[in-house]
Image 1 (spheres, one colour):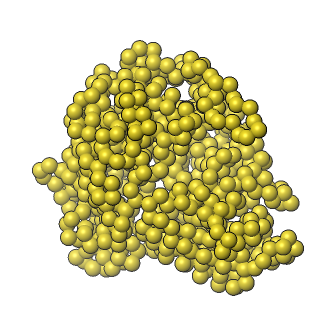
Image 2 (cartoon, rainbow, N blue to C red):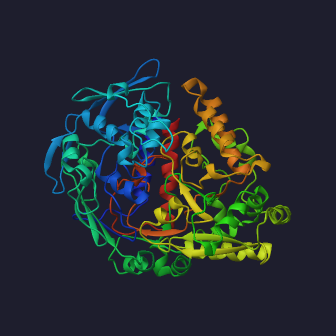
Image 3 (cartoon, rainbow, N blue to C red):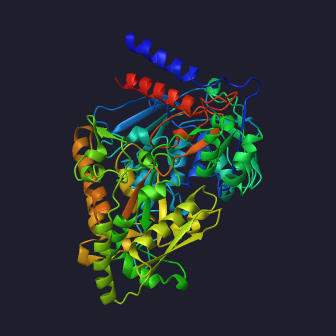
Length: 623
């Protein structure tokens, strides 16, 4: 009874700490500058695309504002005693609607089978298929997928498998069942990811290769809190409340209008001041000005970190950039561990992060790939387990001038003998639409060139395209060093080691050949494979320790340079960030469901009062 009373008081504090909701039909407006390239949620892994999908497609389960799993499309579920069979029972009142909000069909168990078949067909090129094939533990998914792949030149094709070999089955119209090869304790957390979203099979087949095209609102169906009532590429898109949604009573914003403007980052604050939008990113310079003025200080609040995204500088082991950037010379440099370590110790993260968080950059910094407080074992944070503890406990000052120069001198000697030339050209692309990224690159250039002198490295920041930035740079190897990020797909450390394994495009580490330093992708992949082979709820500690070994390998050999959360600073917003769904993985945190438009924006005092109340309420639930 006491816990319930305390929880009710905490929730009341959260609501009472913020301004009241605006009267009338609640609408919410914001600017965006990066257009989606697809509405096909089954193939995307891009943040702005799955953020849209999260609001129009519901999943079997969801997470509430405290990070507690809740029923969604599934009203209930059970798991077998051996932890291998998960059975989900769907609600009766869940439906698909079109871009006009009109009923099309019921959501049925086969919709989850149909989506899995689509994801596991290599010809559809799903960017999230590895979540299902490599991490879900579902019987037969990897073999089925391999049977749909075109063989590499000189290799035999994998055998084509029948669907009945896959452990995903609709037992009846309202019951879907997943059978696992081994116990997978994080399986439930996988189910909010895009590759587990359902699709209406009849509509999918009818649309064919037109399914999910980003041409209008009529290329997909909707079963979520909202439907896409209007979509004019590079103009606007409108999400309207889906009155047919099973939980429509928990959707308080009637209309969400996203307005395209390629200068969104620049003009957003001014449009917010004029009342034309309800959200704007506030850069560090404007934030300082607004906070110093009593008339504007109450308009902004700290930016709540978006989920558990981890940021890091990624070295590219497969340079595909032009001859003017000397890719062959870069290949020699990046495969020299002393060169990479000179950069690791030479990057002053406090200086670069001050661009993002000028008041307290240390608050958003950490030294591992996995963020602190992502998962724990019996109260011990994962980043404090095994060899990761040594990196975690270094504190924010990984910058070490003495070590950086020592590694520089060793690298110069070895690379000169190998035929490299100096200064090494370091192509560093950035997205000009991301607030502060250009400034951060300039700070990094000045800091590194000042530390090492002009004859070691030439940092070359270069603006990339605003649309399709990742495809044009990181995914195609058009960089030497780039600031990258990764968000967890599910609640397990493997989600943070996965991007650097075979076949992934974060750094293309598999192309490295630094054998003299004992660094090769095979060694890293073996560590990941060994950790992945440890399953079951009784083996969590051993699993986490094994993944800690793999992650420590990346950092110790400077395959990447961890940064931290990569987000901070201030925003102007008429939303309470602690009202919406919350989870450290999946798409829940992208959902507008549960949020209300406020009559006036939260300020910094409101934010921290609401945050403290949220922490207290969450702690009570954990107890």
